[in-house]
Length: 429
Image 1 (cartoon, helix red, strand yellow):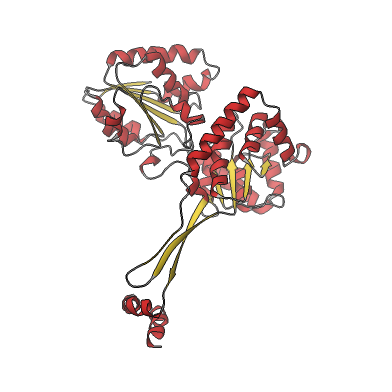
Image 2 (cartoon, helix red, strand yellow):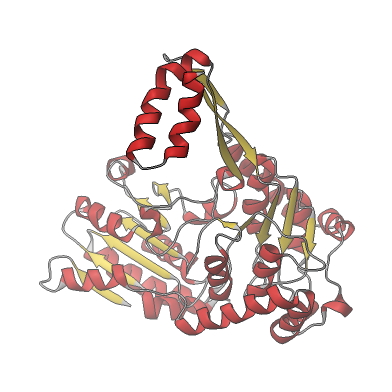
């Protein structure tokens, strides 16, 4: 874990190294994934089955490719009532938040008499990737499938790895609750390839969303253009800006909430209180040792954790904007004052009573967020990722007379005579 002070002479260089550090896939991953994608594109089902045997240690032809909807419905029906209630609360809140995002069609006639507008339509089919390796995430099912459903996607296809052929019942229950149409027992880069290219068994989709490991992220990156993707997501990250009035045990728990995801996750604390910094550092070590996810949490904190102390919390704003963190917690007395200066963050959690973990499950906004400083130019998953906008134009004779001559002039200037002629002939007629 790195401990930095903004007043030290070497701080600028040390902080820059944190900003530019990459915790994502290496060239070997890119090379391997390219090979897997080529296999699936060439050999379809045969390649998917072979890669599943290799990585998930089961035979799809024996365990079954597709998980029937009846099994998903049964999993939901058999859930513990408290757990089902929690899932249903999350689904209701996620659905309501994303319904408010759905864009409206537009249409107008301008001063030249030209009718202009835009129509929003969903994609025909969406693929949702749900991790199943280190842990199973029913929350990811809801966060990916519900926005697609709200967008009006007719076919929602879920892929999830089942190591050893074992199916996670909670993931199946979430699929039933979210209205997933197809569930396939495949994961990894081969699953992304099957969704993009299609195989003899699995029909292709138009968009693929959802988090995954380095191989999944790399497969999405390489297949962008064959299908749409939400983003290329890397390891999780959290930045907590905290004043000295915080309980250090709570701040430590917030930092560990992301460190436990993966050894490559990153947790950063910025504070104006050296005393809080020291107490949080001690509390992280104590709490991490007691976690069932200790191995990941301790490795993440040891290799990527950072505590930064500075003179005033206002000085944290430019640092936060440079980090452009996936999750930003403003655990301060007046979060709005700092929030006003934040330009780059995947999602912001305001005040001492708003832990990032609430956003992962039941708050409503999506927890699929840009990582690796991509919040500088991209946003979290939304209904818009499952929709596309089609513009439309209509001119009558008078409208063409008003703006057509300028089009002819520009086409001639660009050396495109056929463009000019298609307008000119109408004007002359």
